[in-house]
Image: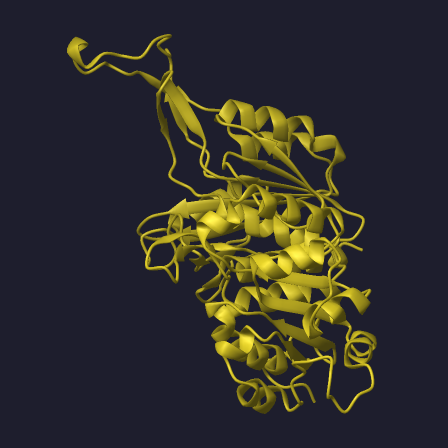
Length: 404
């Protein structure tokens, strides 16, 4: 009988957890626990640097297996090749800039990188480093090489860093790594063409000012990453800049609601699934100034008009076999979202109250309700946005299976 917390995609899988020398190494113990709770058998290989942050006994106790820390002096003749043959997938968390560089360039001078070099299965890397390191040209080249080689990267996230400041570079939370690892074994979207929208559109007032919705695009990007992990061919239409996503995701940058409508609607005939998570501005200025408005001229009078309804327009253009999912960001309850689910012709709507803690724009978590056209709903607990994405894609897969 499977444990209550098991994950069907991970149950019975053999996972090799690599831990390298970053402050986030302390999270590897909890990650190992979560992977074992999901039903996987976990073994661990650590670098010398990792041992300065977390001890072998902690990971050994959680996994029930001896931790490999060296190529020499082990009971096995060739520990790296034996581990590589044993594992169904490898997860490296944290993956430092040093490890990313070694893997990208085929170097193998310790137990972890030698095991990676000997392993020919799915490899998931969870980068962790300071922002300045993440933005270094050499690191960016290595990250691109890893993506081109088919390696799966999850994160990094933005937030507080070990140096006392904040920015991009945090290792994503263990729950998100668990979801991403499960996605490696889930091919439920394989062969499907999926379109996802993300971010908040900007509607110009003049060349430097705009009205729009405040959205980071994190939810849409998590949806795109999860779909790619499950084997889909993914098109991401996003307003957010500097998008780092694993896998072969086609990224289309847009700014306004009109831009997004054009890109989404033009692809309607080719789609199997569309999940429209972008926060599209409902209104735009009728007249856009050609030059920057001057403060000395006084406050301008801005007349607004409606923007194109991207979701409604897509529903009109897709065929009967296409699954369409909408999003609704609400405040003070979800009554309007229920009405939208009933009137828009979607398969279901994902709604959240952005005033709730951890559920607003720019957060790494979300608390949503799935609302169906008949008014029924299913509330999900607060979880990472990658976790929400996994739940949404599982529902999409179930719907498509029911249709035969």
